[in-house]
Amino acid sequence: MKKRTLILAAMLSLGMISSMIATTKSSHSEVMTKEADGTYIINTTTLCKDVKGFRGNTPLSIYIKKGKIVEIKPLANKETPNYFNKVKQGLLNKWKGMKASKAATVQVDGVTGATFSSKAVKENVKRGIAYYQKHK
Image (cartoon, rainbow, N blue to C red; front, side, top):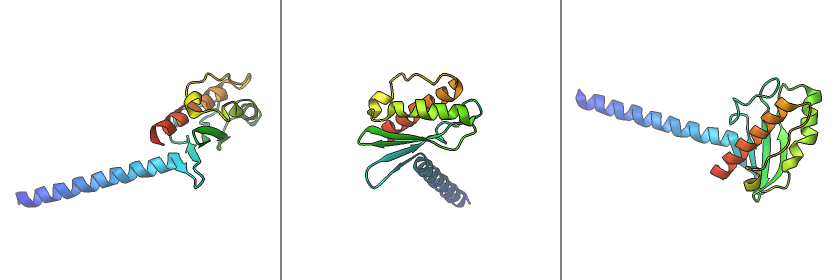
């Protein structure tokens, strides 16, 4: 009886460990992918669930190739369109062409009139780049 219980416990433990590994791998693939040309794409949706703009989350896709930021694209969000357009035009390009190592520490000014959205976007970029540097 003890032998049976021990075997069952070992099987359950292995199952739980396998499940945890699979979850970790799928979470990683949701956050960062690598294209055939070597471009990494970091999706901040799950990385920054707690980062809020004026009306909610402001997830981004950050494109990094050869250690430099190629592009930052906003993903679907509920920010006020007029104000978020200011952020798209005045903030997202400030990191373009910058090395990821510099972008991780650089202080970028926000956009006047879109303070909450600007702060959220800057935090998304900061966390996305930190994730890239740790997992590339």
